[in-house]
Length: 292
Image (cartoon, rainbow, N blue to C red; front, top):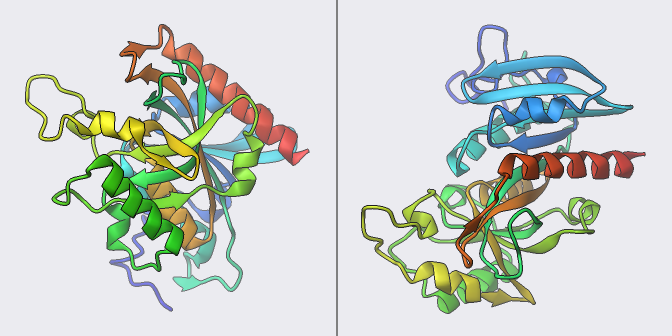
């Protein structure tokens, strides 16, 4: 298949349009962070950096920890940005940008999101780590992609809709699972559960400032949801699209976040920057140990 210019958009150096990256400039293991400023916080742990690229909110550093080649890429906020990032990373892994033809051999990337989140359970305190075993998307992004829903996925969403009283007028929820092998890397000293991905930070996450919420009861209903011995542990804005697109495109994905807020206790971390630093160090240590 030949991908036309309007679909596979490249810049003047034949790099993917938004990320400004060529295939040789990314590693097979990629750490995804939301904040562009966090890329440098990750790459300062590298033994050496071989490549730096940037465009808009998308900043990438690729380098090494010992012999392990790693990239760190900022996604910005939201599932719409994840749609851009994962599709363009997949293009780098699967398409020859010079000929616009698919590669006969396609790479499977390991995509690990390092983020911040809000806890929805009383026993997950601020500054603790949460691994997303599953992600439920309220954003609707994956509804634009054609894919076969498994029996588990359909049962999962049916239970979610029924238990939470989720309004049918909103985007239809969807669910995807993390890669089991990546989850096992972070098995110790972390909470594991279901992550809820919202399409916004305020009303979609039950936050009320000056304007009334349409569904103020939802946030409490989310905390009570149970499926296969999992509860909804946390709420954020990226993981559902990351898991969905990675699954469809043949990549491995996992999200690990630090809880900077607890929505039940209405508390916030006293030093969220320090908590993120601890999370970065923890993730890099576990990845290095796993690759050795």
